Amino acid sequence: MESRVRKKMMLHVVHHPAYVSPATGGGTFRFDKYGLVMDALRESGAAMRVHEPDPMPLSWIEAVHDPAYVGEVATLSVPPAKERRIGFAVTERVMRRAMLSPGGTWMAARLALVHGYAANAAGGSHHALHHTGAGYCVFNDLAITAHRLIEEGDARRVLILDLDVHQGDGTAALMAGRSDVFTLSVHAERNFPVRKARSSLDVPLPDGTGDAAYLALLADILPPVLDDFAPDLILYQAGVDTHADDRLGRLALSDEGLDARDRFVMRMVKARGVPLASTMGGGYGADRMAVASRHAACMVRLAEEAGGWLANRAGA
Image: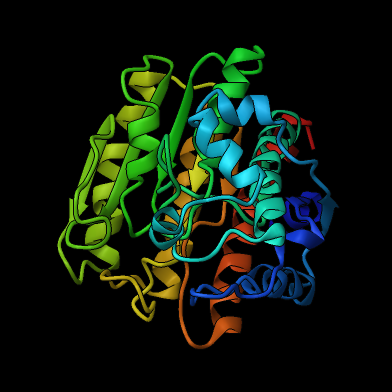
């Protein structure tokens, strides 16, 4: 049975060469992780198909973000105060990447509607707010994608499941008051941002939370949300900064804990027949290849679990 499931596994991953960009002046954020993730995926030997996104049209970004801010990004005129809040300068290459990343998350969601699961090998910019970027995030691809999917009739109800170590404050603020989008954030209580927004459901965790406590909590909260909200598509912020070795994390998940987290999410999703698209989210450390390998492993195991689901649906 395992061999049949693996034979059916196909990872549909969205990537664009422009996801990779040099570090910009005034910031420490490294964009090379996105190229290293693709290297790690190729080295894994997983069957995959790479899809190249188009930039998200400005009108769809402006439907969620302040058009004046969108214009600042598009014309490379972001004020220094906003660039400091973002964490790096908005250069020509950063601007292009900021347009492509929401396009990639939207493409991954559309692919998930067909294949059950797809991944954007970038995205998860969950700190970007209405009028500004923040926390290494320029535009909020999760909120933009959820809004576009619903407006165009591809989904009626979208769950944004955020398991990054940091609260998805921008997503919560941008989607606040909507009955057709549910934001669920499980995060380290004492981590960034200092001022938390209000998600549909927030689950703050104490420092040092490890595998057993984390997985038990997830098993308590996720199934009721899936059953009560009944989404017809899930955007999964699959940050690996919950890992014990992460430079910016405060939680203590092991490699095995991350594996169990992602497989549990996909099992709950496929049991209900709900497509899922993942975004990379956070993952930080001096050993960038180790971080990239965690992201790649996340996509592969989600595809493995989804592959079994698709094989069963196809009658294999």
